[in-house]
Image (cartoon, rainbow, N blue to C red; front, side, top):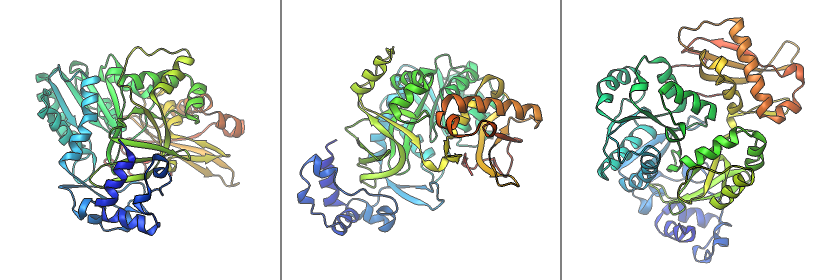
Length: 453
């Protein structure tokens, strides 16, 4: 993508962006070079998309043929017009996963959409992209039970035996919970998994792969990086997964590369379709969508690593990948800062806590959902509290709480040097509060989960 050409096209055709440039006293004719482009003011949800009527955000003031709705972290709905051309472009990312990772061009594939259906961005969009792949000649058949567990239980035993593989697509904690709790013959169905929406650990990948009967996690589980604002921005490849697994076992090396004591989602993206920039540890992107966006600040913490630079880095640390991928740049994404709690000046990341719940001595007892918060006692001293959801049928006990607390502490000390250095040793062990599966206060069924309070 030539971002300067995209800028001029959007400035000419999108009424809201013309108004935005006028407000900032910018003459589009003066933006001629890449250096001019990166000096343009950022657009944001508050400063741009919410300040203009929805049609004015679209080309020629005309909305697309379908609208997706997102509420983000604030609960205030945002509307994102889409068109079939958007879906065809983003279907390329699904194709890269289905073909390059799952070999779906050679296998009859049942694609099971387990994202929420309705106005939300995930379910119907994913379903439509699967249909685009079928139109391209892939032997893919899609079915969309959404998050209806009863439908998933009903349709999979009937349909799965007709296919060479079954691809489950949904949010990581939801798919894990379905695999853990539904008594279905997962190991017989050659299951593959596509996730989006949350960062997960490599321990999670290995754990879910084992429970679903996936022999090769590198070619069995792939994550997409997407936003409601612009659809899918990048996807995991076998190469990015191998690199991430290498870094997961070497926290100091990962911190050297990413600058954080936690492991981000690591994907590759197509620079002919999306243009990424870093801004103070966060991401900007430009892209042609139903709502075209220029230097849009999505507030995701992360950064960009060129392909050659990434390969040189891991090779310099003694790792030679066994797989290849298109020579495309990498983007890494931590997620948004509202999922972090501060404890004695140390940032406690949900990714660190999650790894503690994915250890062998704990993983069979819990669903993987938790809520982290800092509470104060009667003396106003802070304590790190982790509320954990137990697997269906498990009951709270002091023994389970102790085992979970020790496991979380061990991973916090291993992965988070800031926690180990800042938090006094006597205050490091988290308080564990156990809740039964589906607890309405902390883990209400069907609601999008938040990991902090």
